[in-house]
Image (cartoon, rainbow, N blue to C red; front, top):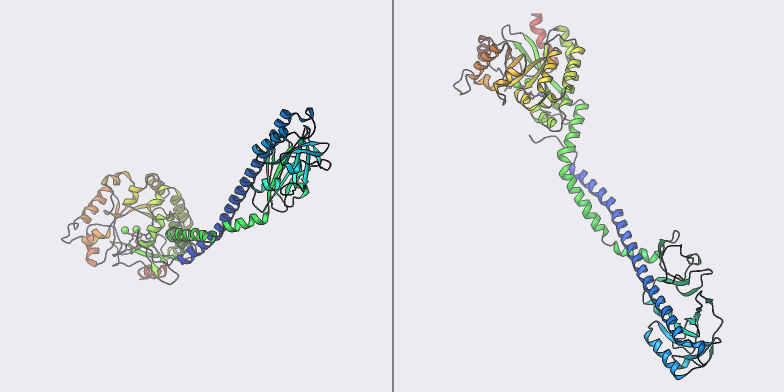
Length: 531
Ligand code: C2E
Ligand code: CA
Ligand code: CA
């Protein structure tokens, strides 16, 4: 296909804008991806931490229950024996989360794994009691203990365990994580809080769920709640929206460069796709409906009388810069873009507008229209030409459809289309005869009215060229088929005389007239008529 000369609407700018747009659209998508990833990671982190804390709490409770039933302190003598102290010490050593173990009698620490604690220290009233009888003290300050507190104390059957939850839990959570361990029954007392926990977050776990992940609607904070194995305690961990944002900002450092790369890829893709397809199509479509196409008419003469009896309509494209493109450039393009029917529609509209003036002077004037191979696949061309014929009130055979030999070979439905054309009083001419790949058997298959001898054979006729005799053979062939012959591309009086002598009915060529505007054709047909 010839490379098009028409100017494309600056593809670099279009590609640049497309790239920018794609890049700008990609950024929020990438950011959203980072946000989702960070939130997922944080939920997983909080979930891991609450699971570890749940396991730890369960271990303490189990150890406490096991030792309480094994020692059965209420049944043993009061106070602190050496053996009891040893056993409390052993318990503390094998229970890593326990800071100390005691005997508690009448709210006093009467025996302890750490000797400093077992000196009858009086405890305040317990804060809550579980259904299994375990009593709990929260945030207890004990001066005698190594760290001073606050501690959580669990007591069962006189056996007490002291935990340092702040120390234990801080191992699992980062500094900006808030933690609460609270009872799963109202009033939801907390055995541990790290950071400020809003009161509405401390609530019963919905029945049937072991873990809940949610993002607080108002603050945007992430929350994970997990029910302990016993089902009595809830471990809550939360991360603030601010620290989440900081992590997202951290993860989105390179997003602009990624968006830039995506935009660049988009621009390159646009540059590759845009110019060939869309701009050519748009430019051609605009030309078709904005009146840039026009017709020139080449006279067709009766060789015997020398009279101009008709004309072939040949399309031209006047571009915005004033230059004119020939059909050898835009007809193949129109075929490639499946716009051939738009070309013939345009040609028919121009003929309908321009021909009436000529028909007034020469009512039986013939007009030929070129039809492309693609149009022979549907009946749209038949309808279009029938409409033109009716509109101009043309007699049968005044309107001629020119089809090339190769288009007959290409189109699957050419035969029914040709039959319909002829049935509607439209003559059919085989154009450029001898140059296509059509076998002679086509001539028997396709009904037609005029055989146009291609100009290459016309100019070679009577010369020493190897194709010199072909024109004469075609003339003989047309006679035996009983159809009119038209010699194309007659440029000299000798050529005209040669074909006239052979009995060729019609001719066309620069000798009789190059393709010309309708105004000129009008003058041309007026001349001989007046004289
Ligand atoms: P074609 O149908 O064979 O048209 C004849 C071509 O020969 C025209 O070229 C015409 O200007 C040129 N010609 C006429 N007399 C002479 C001569 O004496 N010597 C020489 N050397 N050339 C001569 P044009 O106008 O450039 O058209 C080229 C082709 O484009 C046409 O070949 C036709 O197949 C196609 N075409 C033109 N208009 C249309 C159209 O509206 N629709 C379709 N589908 N095809 C068209
Ligand atoms: Ca033609
Ligand atoms: Ca031709």
